[in-house]
Every structure is written in structure tokens, then in C-alpha cells.
Image (cartoon, rainbow, N blue to C red; front, top):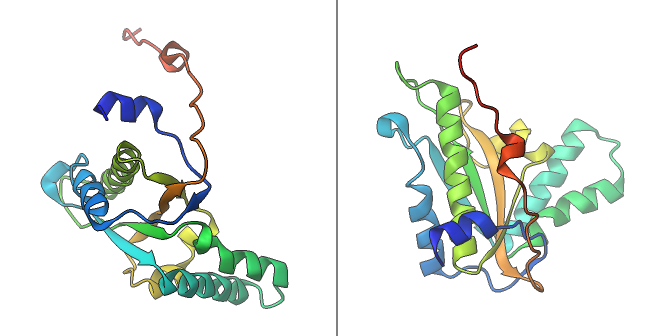
Length: 187
């Protein structure tokens, strides 16, 4: 697939099934991530790969996080939390790992890590792998972050769900770039 085809036609794929991307596909996705814009070459990101029994363990972690926030949480909410990671055969957690630097602010490093996540999505699409970027309340839950081994300075940017699309991909809506462009002349 040509680069512009991937950029112009990538869509989120919510319905994913086995098989997960193979080792070679995963390697290419991560290589693409490592090409994200990176002022200072700090590589302010890391990735956590979760599959198989790890997905069930993550579901239990999500349920535990809910119970810690609200001991009276409804069983339906706990069941939903437990099933969230099971929506795909592979989950990549994208972690922003900013570093103290005199010229590269924290926000810029987090944006760089977000670009790495986007590169994974594009590389997945280019290889015929379905993917969707999800966040939600678990991405900002400190218990989840600590249980996944994040430091106090790190944050979860994305849960990237990856697998084989169930059914055909949707056609992306055609948007007009001029609707999002404003020219500034200094006046």
C-alpha cells in the first residue's frame, strides 16, 4: 500500500477477531512508531503488548479499578470492564514516557508519543490489520497505570486494539480541507 493511500483511507475498526498480527507485522508497526517526530531524539514512549491470558488479567485489573473508585459499582459495569480488553486478540498500550529536558517540554514529548501511536495505526492499516485507538477512564486511572508498571511521570495515551477486521472496512467520509483551514496574514 502506498503511504498516501494509508493516510487517506485508514479507518478505525471496532470489530476485531483472530488472528492477531503476526510477529513480522508487529515489528513493522513498532518500526513505524519509532519514526514519529521526536525533538531531541528522546524517544518519549514505550509500548506494552497484551494478548492471550493477559487480556483477561487486564479485564480483572479494570474491574478492580472500578471497585476501588466505587465499592458499590453495579455488576453490569464490572462485567463490561472485564470484557473491554477482549474486543481484540492483541492490545498495545501506548505509554508516554517524558523526560526532563531543557529544550523539549513535556507536552511536546507527549505529542511525539501520540504520533508514535498514530504511526502504529497507519502501519497496521497498510498491512491489512484492523485497529482502533481507545482511551476511556481506564487510560487515566492511576491504579491501572501503576499495575502496568508506569512511573508517576508516565501516562497511558492509548489502548490500541489490533486484529483481523470482521467484515469489510467502512469507507471514510470525504472531508473538504478548506473547511478546516484559515489563512493568517498578520493583520
